[in-house]
Image 1 (spheres, rainbow, N blue to C red):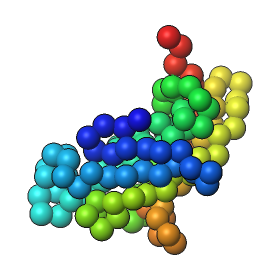
Image 2: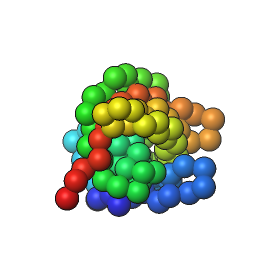
Image 3: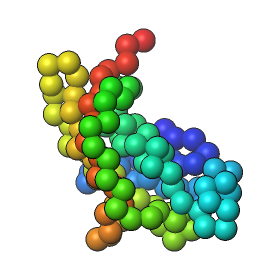
Image 4: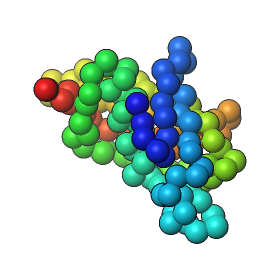
Length: 117
């Protein structure tokens, strides 16, 4: 899964997210000082939740987003995304943390639902 910005691989302890520092998005966000946009961090977490469930999902509500550290793709090219997914009456509630080593970049709380083909 992924695109030209990142790729995701499922691990036993979460999801490995490899960033592509050469992606065009980093040239504009921000020139000379690239940063992984918060909206992309949310997208990564939603994709990881879907992989955890074994099904594509759609974001229903972003309840809380805490962006705690700057993600420079040249320095932090590989991230770890951990998702705790709990079923709810109308879908799933997800707590996600994006980190590397001891550094936590973002904490996200959202709800999502399964996409039906």
